[in-house]
Image 1 (cartoon, helix red, strand yellow):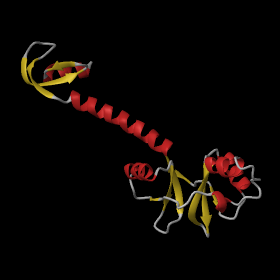
Image 2 (cartoon, helix red, strand yellow):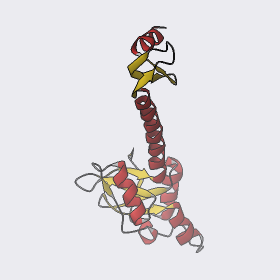
Image 3 (spheres, one colour):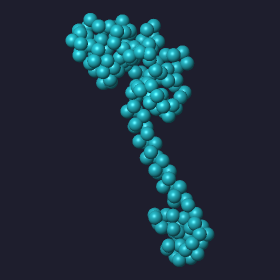
Image 4 (tube, one colour):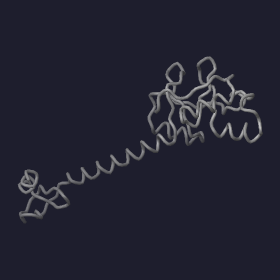
Length: 169
């Protein structure tokens, strides 16, 4: 999650939300009433509900165009939980709240995709490490000795003494 997401009070003008989004280089503002989250206003909300209707952004209040109800997730939940909530609720942004329902962060689809890519790369590395640790019975690729402790190293199966020599080089 990204901490300190962009927020705006429910009675502020849409123009102020757009300014905040540009300033913070984000696509949404979490809408607050009495410092608690009640909705979210996105670039799409502004485009479809204000600009496309030729309304003046300075005259329209955030509360009139925000998306609600706001779907949130608690901070102790996992990335997997967040992804499932996004899919189930058809949302691309998920505010993260603490036990008092105060906003402490936001998770976006992009955040999850970034983490997923990193996790996939780690899994590939773990599979490769485990593949190297496979123990087999057979003939050592280097010295030809029969062994019941062959392990893959640099894509060849080596006995314990050949592995030791290889690692010392």
